Image 1 (tube, rainbow, N blue to C red):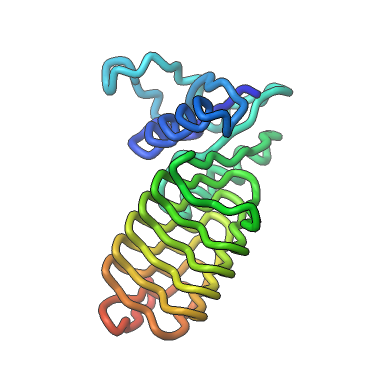
Image 2 (cartoon, rainbow, N blue to C red):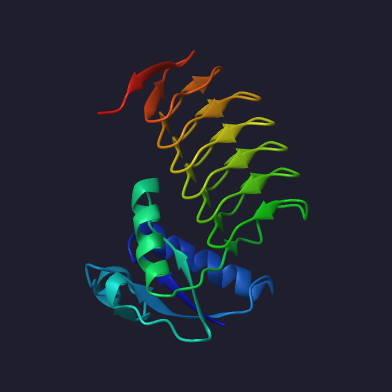
Length: 213
């Protein structure tokens, strides 16, 4: 399989390194062939990477043996890029770093990224294109909707339900059995004890809710 990474910014280059480690560990049978990026960056000059930028998102013509993983932050942007690529016939693959703990009972839709030192508990259900960042923890039986992102050092306790395109900021805690609605945000350091309405932002400890503009 030829692996294409959508997004050549900071997160995309992190995903590149995760994929290299997964390939080296025998966890991913792939060859990384390049990036897609709308800004056409010069990666050799910018970061020393001798990896080509194959073109923009909307110019991508997927090959039969190619798969894509998204290396773009923020849930809304992940969802937009995933939809644009899907419309062009792309197929998606997940990248799980060998340093993450992901037991075999985890259900994972295509396109997820699980970073090193992340913990994904038993019977967790990850929707398409979910990003579980470094040192993030998902307790048993959590459900995470498509295109959601858990920032570094977040914790979702058992039975938490995150909707689609949810962002959980660094150091935030969502306590057991709490639900977070679609397009909601949990601010860095917040501790959430009750349902977060769709489209709201949870801030503080105990968290209070602010409607997004």
